[in-house]
Structures are given as structure tokens and as C-alpha cells.
Amino acid sequence: MTGPAASGQRIAWEELPEGVRAAIQGWLGSPVASAETQPGGFSPGVASRLVAENGRRVFVKAVSAVPNRDAPRFHRREATIAAALPESAPVPRLLWTYDEGGDGWVVLVFEDVEGRHPAIPWQPDELDRVVEALETLAESLTPSPVGPDVVRTVETWLMQNGQGWNRMMEDPLPGRDEWSTRFAVELAQLEGQAPAAARGDTLVHFDTRADNLLVTDDKVYVVDWPHAVIGQPWLDVVGMAPSVAMQGGPPPEELLKRSASARAANPDHITAFIAALAGYFTFQSLLPPPPGLPTLRRFQGAQGDIARRWLDERTGLSKLPPASRPDGFVQRFRGM
Image 1: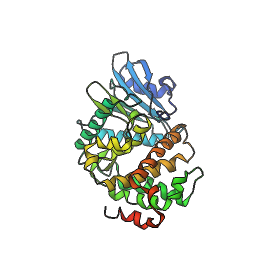
Image 2: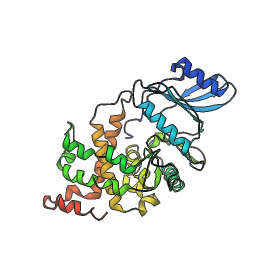
Image 3: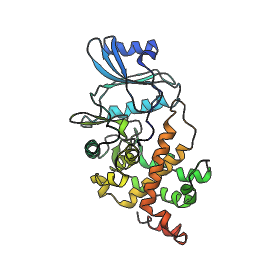
Image 4: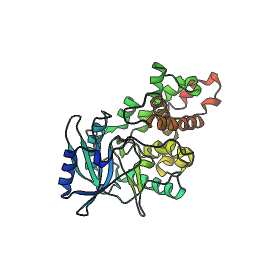
């Protein structure tokens, strides 16, 4: 069981408007000889490895506001963040951008990395390499080389997007599972602790999963940076744990044991963030699919199933007698 695929509505290089292709080939200084569409990821646009007739190789991402109006905004944000990342970070270098403005086409051109996504189901040796790479990445991005004028803090993100349990109390969407309904008050209270718990000064990717990683013989690259935030160094490992378990890897608690930053963290801080993560996935999975991202809700739902079980294991909510809730439950986390 490896869960639903992370996939959007890719379009081929040849389907780009002629003017956009001409601009890219003009920058390359040569016509494109071959284009290979890359799998993985939800972006509804072009994601291709290009080889020009002059031998130059690059990776190109391109989107417009059709079919998803948010896609150009994400690409513009990624361009700003990628340009600010230090040379020491294991990320493909951003080489060039093309932006028609407004709802027009946004193109990002990166160096081509001769790598592949980690094998699914996850293999223990590759998972160890990925966790080690994320630890090294966090060290190199502490303190954050990018300021809050470029990326959001995790507190801001959580206040804007990480209030899933509270939102479901205000708007009880159909399809909620029984556990989420039964413990709605406790979950909403615990998720309220997450912004303070996750606060830090590390630039983190904040969307780590197999399709955002490239593995080579000697390196692990982290790609697709539009969602980066400033927070605790353990956020990437904790955030990817549900997808790892979903895609044949170890249970979340076992993954955390592989991470030095997670082992060193306050366990209650991690639990509060898991509450926000579980609430986010659960709430998002109950919404209609965004245009151009037909598999996103199923992918979020599968992660939400795992995150809720993980949260229940860490809190013991299902085993707490009613008399100890909610005050006794929340008291456990007030010392954070």
C-alpha cells in the first residue's frame, strides 16, 4: 500500500505557446532537441527536462492561470526563494525566469540534476540518506538566509492555514470521521499551541515528500520551494512523516527517531504541530479538488488518516476518561 500518487495535470513542452517556447530557446541560444516530461508533483503545467541542440541541459517549470489561478503566484514565490538560497544548500540552481505578468505564463529554468525520486515503497537506506540531508540542510539554513520579507514565518502560516480543527468546528464539513468529531474541542485547543511550538529561525522547505526530492549517487536534492517558511529545524522531518508512512516507509515515530533535531526537540512542541498538521490535512481533504489538481484531496486525505492515528497515539486521547477532558488534556501542553 503506497497511497495515491502525487500528480497534477502535466502538459507537454510542445503544448506551450509558441512565444513562450521561443523565449526559452532564445535564452538557451539553441532550439530544443528533446523534452522529457517529469512525473511527480501537483503543479498543473510543464515540468520537463530539455536538451538543446547545442548540448545544454536544463529543467523547466512553466504554468499559467489556466487551469489553476494560484499556480503563477506559487511559481513567482518559488523564483524569489530559490534565488535567495545559498550555494551550500542542496538545491538545483535557478538559472533564469520568464514572466508574462498577471495571469500569463511564468517560467522557471533550473540546472538539470541527473537524479531520480526516491523509490516507492521507501527503502531504508534511501530514507536514511534523505533524513541526513534534511538535517544538513537545516543546519546550513540556520539562521534563515531569507528574511520574513521574502518568506512567511511558520506562525503566520499556521494562523492562516493551520486551523483545520477550529475551522471544522465553525463549518462541520460532511465526511468527517468519528474520532475528529468526538474530540473536536480538544484538537482545536491543542492546535492552538502549534504557532508558539513551531517558532524558530531555520528556513525549512515545509513540503517535503518523495516527489520533492531527487536522489543521486552522492547527494540528495530538495526541489520545489514555494512553501518555505521560517521555523523549527525539525519541521521538515515531522511534516513528511505521514507521507513516508503512506508510501511504504516506517511509522512516524520510527522516522522521528532517525532525526537528531526531532530527538532533541520538546516532545509536546512536536505533538502540538502534529495536531495542526492533522487538522490541515483533514480539513483540506474534505474540500472540493482545486482546478487542475484532481488527486490532491485524496493525497491529503491519506496523510490525514495517518496523522490522526499518530496524534491519537501521542496524546492518548482515545484512552482518556471523559472526566479528564478537556481541561486535564490541555493542561499537559500548557507548559510549552
